[in-house]
Structures are given as C-alpha cells and as structure tokens.
Image (tube, rainbow, N blue to C red; front, top):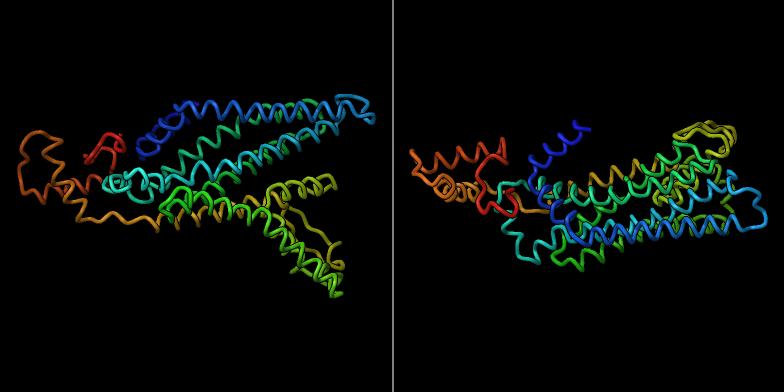
Amino acid sequence: MSTLVDRLNHLAQANPLISKELRSRMRSGRTIILLTVYLSVLSLVALGFYWIIYASASLRSPYDQQVGRDLLYAIVTFGTLLVTFLAPAVTAGAISGERERQTFDLLMTTLLRPRAIVLGKMGAALAFLLLLILAVAPLESLAFMIGGVAPEEILGSLVVLVCGVLLYGSLGIFWSSLMRSTAASTVLAYATMLLVLAGFPFIWFITSIMLSINGNGSAMSHSVIYVYFTGLILSTNPLIAMGLSETFVRAGHPLFFYTDDRLINGQTIFILQPWVLYCLLAVIVSALLLAWSVRLLPPVRRHQALAAARQAIPAVSGTPVAGPPLANAEHVMQDAESDPVAAPVPGEGEYGA
C-alpha cells in the first residue's frame, strides 16, 4: 500500500496539474453530495429490486441463486448508466472551462506540455470517477453473499465500468479541447455518446430487418462477416455486451474467448466475449481521442518559454545572475524539460505547485 501511495505522490509531483485538480475536486462539497446521492440511489434500487423478487410467489428462499444474479444485474445496470452519464459531465469543461475563465493562456505559459495538460485533466477526472466505481463494490458483494454469482463476474463488471468511464471521459476531453464553450462541448459529448450507445445497435437492428425482408437474412446470418459485424456493433454498448457475455457464460462458454463451430455450417471461428471486445474498443478509442486532444492544444513555443524564463530568473532567485541572460534562460529551459517541477515556473501558484 505504501508503494502505491509513493507512486501516486511521484505522479502528482511529475504533473503538478493533477495535484491541483485533485485538491480542488476532492475537497469540494459537491463531491461529497454527489457521492452520497449516487450511493443512496444505488442502495434504494438494490433494496427495491430485492424486495420485489423476495415478495414474488415463485421465490422460495431469499438466498436463491437467481436472486443473487438478478440483484447483480440490477446494480451493474444502474451503476453503469449513472457513471457513463456522469463521465462526460465531469470532463466536458476541463479545457473549455479554462478558456471561459480566461485562464487558458496562463496555463499555456507554464512549462507544462500539452500532453501533460490533457493527461493531468484526464487523470484527475478519472480518479474521481474511479472513486464512484469503487463505491459500488460493497453493493455488488451483497449479490455474491446471496449466491449464484462468481467472483470473476463481479471483477468483470468493474473492469467494464472502468473502461466505460475512460472512454466517455476521453470523449468529453476531446470535445472540450475542440470547442470554446463548455455548454457546446457537453452537448456534443452527450450526443456522441448517445449515438454510440443507441445509434449503432439501431443500425444493426435496421440492417437485420432489411436483410430479412430481402430474403438474404438466413444466408447472411451464417457468414463470417455478419457474425463479426454483429459482435462488433453490439459490443459498443456496455449493457448489451455484458448481457450477451452473461448469456454465453451461462451456456458453458469461457469468460474471455472461445471457439464455436455451430454458427457457420460447421466452420470453426474464434469469438471474443462481448465484454472483452468492448474493453478493447474502449481503450483503443480512448487513446486515439486523448492523442487528438493533445494535437488540438497549441504547442509550447520555445521562444515564448525562453522569454518567460528570462523574466522569471531574477524574480525567483532575487539576486543578479552571472552570465548572459539568454544562456541562463536556455539553461533553465533544459532543466525544465528534464524536470518541469524543479524548474522555476512563471506565475507559479495556481498551476505550478
């Protein structure tokens, strides 16, 4: 545990923006209120769902295995909906909010590179969202205590939640880097998220209906392209991906991947479980969105940083500096590139600590 804390401290020192964002976010009263409301809603949902199942006439025991599975599905479903809809709201104002508060230029005059700024904003938001995900774990353990749920299913649901907040958080960062208004970036982030969650499955549904009407549905459903296309499209929605994976696991298939020769006329094909495919897609798309966000920020120009360093040297040291000013400024720039924390930063205070 101490090693993990030391690594987190080192990460905060390497990128001071993470430390600043975490202090302002985690110490806010809104965080406590949001976490309380989030857990209260999930607890009420779990209690109400359990009471409905227990009161049904077909239930013989409150410790029936089906109760544990249904309770886990309910908690994971509502937890996924809440976390995925919170992720864009948390990150959509990360960069555009700096522009609206007129602190973006001040942020860009620091010696932090655009990559450090984007990763610092994303890291702080992801830490907050991970706190929400970890808060769901005790509720999911109730389903494990009742029975009918394997530990790997609970871990798999938590991994899907983490990949989901990474994807939708990166989506908010991307639109925040592209737009100048937080309202515009928030609307576009939610519109893109809804397109992915509902639009892609709807396209698959319409395509299947059109193939059935044309009489090609039976032939296409037994082709390799259609099987992989169906798995790819349906795996873009975390709820559908987890539901399909649970169905396959209950049918006796492994948790991660398997081979099947019953789908395409005896031809053996390799199939990834939908939840694994969703996690892979989420990680790849998140990396692309973050890289694009870094490209959207203006680069740190060396001559501007040199001018800022020349002005910062007398203010920081308080004593005359021997040697040509330009040489000293270049020396400061070299030190800043190797250790941006130890170097003097102009305007240090809000972003330099």
